[in-house]
Amino acid sequence: MINFPLLGAAASGHLIGSALAEILFGFWPAFIMTTVITIKAFIFQDGGISVLGVNILNMAIIAPALAVLIKKIARIVHLPIFLTAFLSGWVSVVGISFMGALELALSGVVPFFSCKDSFPLACINWNR
Image (cartoon, rainbow, N blue to C red; front, top):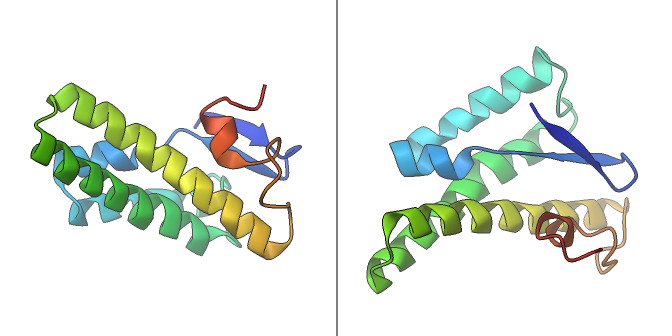
C-alpha cells in the first residue's frame, strides 16, 4: 500500500489495480475491488470507514467502467494490447482523480478549480 499525501495530507492518493483487474477478469469480477477496499478500511485502517462508499464508487465501479470504455474504443481503432492496457490504466486513474476532486469540492474541503490542489493535475504532474 503505497500512499502519497495530497492537499496537505487532507487526502491521500495511491496506486490502484482496478483497470488491471478489469483487463484480466472482466468488468463484473472487478467488483472484487470492493472486498479489497473494505479489508483495507477495516483491517489495515487505510482509506477510512467514513469514505468507504466513495472509495468503492471510485475504485470498484468508475475505474473498471472507464477501463471497459477504453477497451471498446481500442478495439474499434485496432490499438495494440499493451497500448490499450496503458491507456486503460491511465484514463481510469485520471478519471477517478477527477471524481475525487469533484467529491472533495462538493464536500467543501477544497475548491474544485484550484490547479495546485486538483487531483487530476497531480496525477498527470502538470502542477509543478
